[in-house]
Image 1: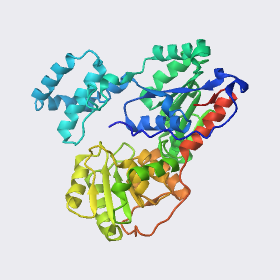
Image 2: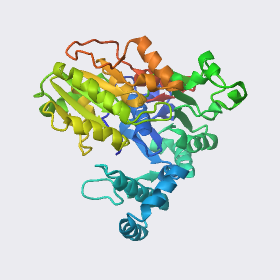
Image 3: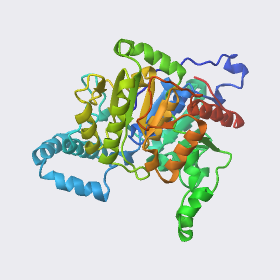
Length: 449
């Protein structure tokens, strides 16, 4: 499932003609996003580019490392164990794949593995199709991140700017898989590009012009974290140094949600959500991570809490992530599938996530997802977090910061959803974009669509 893409907001910038402001040479007019194929990461880059006013002038490249994200020992064993069961499916698909020349080997392998995983889990979603057609965009149209190609693009933009008028190139990357590509682009074309890495690259921050990362990524440097790790392991824990002047710290994840987006989305989803009984509670369920583990026990607890507060709700809408374990979703679906107050999204398009953000009166979000929580907290509406006590290490620090700022409360099952409360919405993306503009200005550059 690809990131949800929103229309470009109108630019507030009004000024005199460029020829009187230093010329087009210093004006950034387009951006390149280096993605890793995961919506959560790419959504952060798209959100920043959108906040800078370059949404309609960006190109998304996907690092080739994305196309084999599951080739670790566990997944390889899973793949082998499923091969017999899905023998006919995989053989027929492989024959089909090998006949396509427009799709790279990485993409073919990724598509095959995704299909096997989806069939084995019984999920109601499919990967991006191999071919374009039928109104959809296929893998054949996905651009692989080629460092030489992007560097050449940046240099040609400068060499031919009197004809092209594109100026320098903004490069925005997010996720560990993109570090090598983004840092190589800056090393080879440092005079032609401004490279921003979102999420902490762990070391050698000087490989980028800017790094944007949540404060909790520096949790390992705190006294509390140091006490949790044996002394002999301290040298292996990253980051090892505090943030310097070219690191922008946020509370949560970047995204595309702001007040203008919520207003336009509310209008777009009016017919579906306006008739629903109020208050509307939206429940977003993610998936267990290394820093926030849970399973059927949390699903049973969440189910019991929702049953307790159901009488104070007019409508409850539940959404699962594509990576929510089936043992979690089955428990919740079994309990609420026939409840007239409850709607459970089946994973089919259109994705109602944006409509939920615009129309919900309150949210319940599992504690594992920084992105889902950050988006919900950008609305200024009540956000209840399920299972924060299960989180550890830096994710525990993230929840502590949210509580101290008053933007979330733990979900206990005793809430009256009809009683609302509010707070100043998180505005990390806009604040980060403002600091990016300041950093560009120090270099004598600026962003202008």
